[in-house]
Image (cartoon, rainbow, N blue to C red; front, side):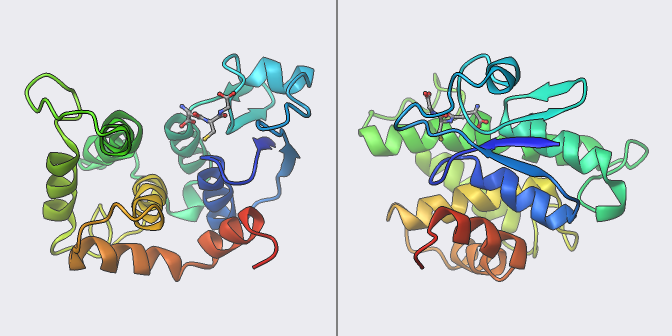
Length: 199
Ligand SMILES: N[C@@H](CCC(=O)N[C@@H](CS)C(=O)NCC(=O)O)C(=O)O
């Protein structure tokens, strides 16, 4: 399996995910800042938008971090990161898995760009609504699906980590506690070490 990756991008999520799984993979550097390797035919085939992360696994080529996490979780059920098809919680799991790219990310853009919130018109509601829904969901749970750490935590945890890192996390013990629990995980530490090799 090939992972097309660049440091300091959303690709760190997929390193985190793959490290949680613990199976071998090949990490191919595509430098989105200098353009180095962007013309690699394997990368172009896996990522029509020219963005990272993307994966190529035989016939399977994916270029959305949410879809990649779901694929990997389902492909490696023994890693315990998926919620199986016969589990009534399967679709709640998928809903949270989609929350990062569908809700958290546009809400973060609103916050960073100081776009005035339009709670009723925007699919993500507003940054504040996104954060309060997340806080409510995590208020009495260790992980987003309860006691079990899943692929949905890789996505949501990666976003909460970035929200803290960029200094837009309001004082919030629930979400800060969740981010701290994520950072204890060796797989996330490995992903972050690749992002910041000097630290
Ligand atoms: N939908 C993608 C978004 C990926 C994305 O926006 N990647 C950025 C880096 S964080 C990128 O590759 N930008 C380079 C470019 O657009 O040329 C995902 O979450 O997987």
